[in-house]
Amino acid sequence: MITCGCDVGSRACKIVLLDDDKIVGSAIVPASDDSAESAERALKTVLEDSGIKKEDIAYTVGTGYGNPEIPFVQKNVAEMNCHAKGANFVNPKVRTLIDIGGMDCKVMKLNEKGSIENFAQNDKCASGTGLFLEDIAGVLETGVENLGDMSMQKTEDVKITNQCSVFALSEIISLVALKVTVPNIVAGIHAGVANRIVSMVHRVGLEDQFMLSGGVSKNAGVVGEIEEKLSIRLSVSDVDHQLLGALGAAVLAQSEK
Ligand code: ADP
Image (cartoon, rainbow, N blue to C red; front, side, top):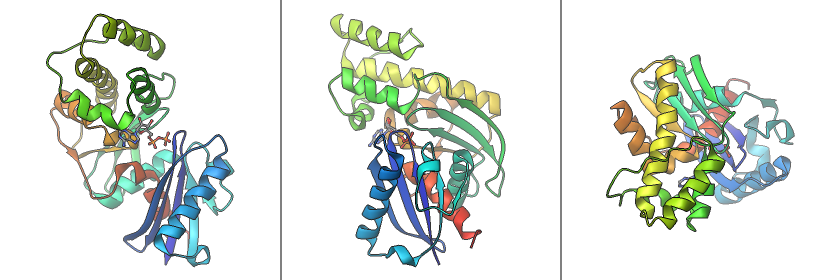
């Protein structure tokens, strides 16, 4: 039986097709202002890529910021529950899940079934989110996908003192003018993002194993800073961790049918 999970986020729309325990299709497309359009575009992409027909999908669960708008779902489930199920699907030993998406970040404590027992959330402040990192990349005239590699070239620690994203952006422009190198600035930004996550993890409680979900999981600089500050290793799977929310939605769709 094929089920579908569709996660319409603020920056990207993610979709997964699951056939029992096998992922048979997935797509990540940029989110537009129109969540219904983004979801339809993601569905069209995954159906074309996988060769699966829409009528072969037995059940679809929607999630994410734009979920009320998705036209082809049978049910909507809260985003955190979907990320938790997705992480549990790829590694049932995960107990602490950190989700860093475009607009917010969350830390969840999971049990062995992938249910959430406790969580902390930051949805008030833009700095520390994926969109903030995109803005930083914009100011530095590069793509967000390059920040991780760039930060690996750092030669010394630079502390970004402003906590607010608007002030942090102007601080970065000043640092560039002061000839502080871009790798050192980017590494300083990653360290600031990681510091916010670390304090949320401490609020929820440190419990092995750890996993990162959301698009920022692709930023090796942020990953490295979190691992260093918490003295942990983040668990990785062969599935793109930006897809974990959509994957969890597809897993939850299996129990609906
Ligand atoms: P949302 O669900 O809010 O749309 P996502 O979990 O899809 O958010 O994450 C989007 C964020 O992921 C972007 O803002 C960006 O910072 C980050 N991101 C996406 N792709 C990459 C990449 N290839 N390398 C590094 N960061 C990335």
